[in-house]
Length: 269
Image (cartoon, rainbow, N blue to C red; front, side, top):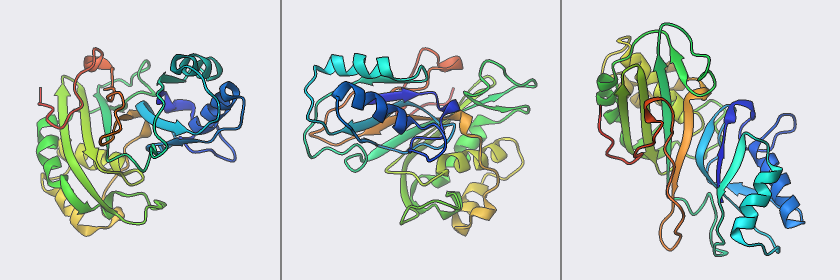
């Protein structure tokens, strides 16, 4: 199933001892519709405050329901800040996490002198201006297969820091900026740390080659600020054949309210 959620009031995807999680809400709703206890697995575990337009999750059940009934039933039992957008029956070999070969995130930034009220939990607000073209140029040094130790959280539990970034682009439309990044997988806080480094370059606080220098150190303490969670969206999960799932959903906010491509060749505006 495809899942979207506003992460502002969730303590991330994963079930927590104390704190509301997306996984717990989904498992409660799915179990109610299935009339049995169900465990829900996702493609990418998001952190506290992070949003999703196209999370993919799967569950195993003995219950038989028409696909549309799964959607209606689960949504009727979910809180207003989470929703199932589609549901499909898949083969037993499918796994939302382990079958995925690529994930994509978008990070939204709004530069304005005054803080925003309407977008307060939806974007990263900055009171100063940023140079999106400069950020895009600096970002290209991070594309490829690298050791991203300098961009992972101290508590990251991934066995290896090696990740392959397929594309990393920055768009700017007036005071709005969007960072789009696709990779085979991500480390904890990796996108937010990338965004923090690129914002320093865009603000003129760091040179164009600083992201490459940070990457080479493999030292998180050299990487500057971790950007706020509010601006981060999980927007696409890609699976190889024979798995055929609906495409990702771009962030529809600000100048991108009508939606546009989240593909690897996004052009600067």
